[in-house]
Image 1 (cartoon, helix red, strand yellow):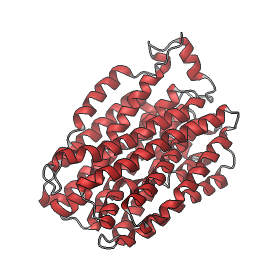
Image 2 (spheres, one colour; image 1 turned 135 degrees about the vertical axis):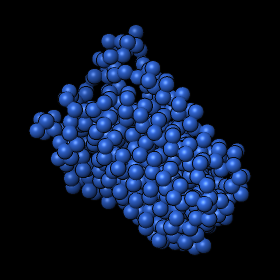
Image 3 (cartoon, rainbow, N blue to C red; image 1 turned 60 degrees about the vertical axis):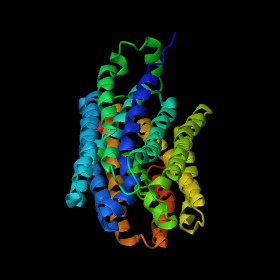
Length: 426
């Protein structure tokens, strides 16, 4: 009988990404409270804190993807989650007198550790799932980002009062879960060929329709020479829109509709729960199209174009007269983004051998983080908390960037086909 041990690995990846997004989402939930009641940050101060995370995230991606390709996903993932857990807890040590610099340092450490999450999960899925199942597997893991983003606004108000008392607890409660995860991961994970609980039947299924593999580690430079790498990087530019939703949706709803921390929870839960559906459906739809006989090129690109169209209504969010109308528009955009994200990560494993996946994801993630830093710097100079209309320009760009990225993909890679490993070995 064929066993499905790969789904246990998928469950571990789901848990890790959930913990990861609770860690990074806590600040987005607490931002209005910390800004107005604890640290007295300006909008520019908050933008610098978010930029610090993205800067370390980008720098980490320069090295972490290649590092994971060389040492393997088992060790690489364990190191990454240990780093981000330590710095996540370190937020609680920051005192108001050093609020800005303290949070900048803590966010940089968190960002560097968290840069390992997507190179590791994408590489693990490439190792454990055949091509036709990777879209759904990636969608399932991508959905856990929204589970984390949903849990954060539910959990934070249980510990933190509207005036900011006990805010430190919000940055501490994931550390124990992270420690448990590392132990379970280290005891559980091996590559499919080396795992004692993988049957020959399951191993044959995993290896079905995989592209030709190269056994030696690949240099960052060899991967960077491929136009497919830069096509993926272009598809990561809309990450700036996702981070905008994650870190600024709470402040937008506060500034426009006057919601405080006790009333932000449900709207944020709805936004990110809707994003969950998009993540799973995005992977399922492209997988179904492949099963129906569509080519990888047609299935992935059709799904990406649909996502780009579904994001467009978010350009109207600042014109919403009711908070729940704004929540609906933000939820649709977040869902479309997560479907987009699911498919672009799957494209990497469609085109590249496993030894290159971490490096490609790292390069693309670095470009996405660079775009996000530029966006956050701009937000700090454009947004005014006393004027909710100042959010119009950012939401307009967030709505249009997906169509621009899709057009660039068509120009760079008119047809998605696996990269010739001989090109990577040169």
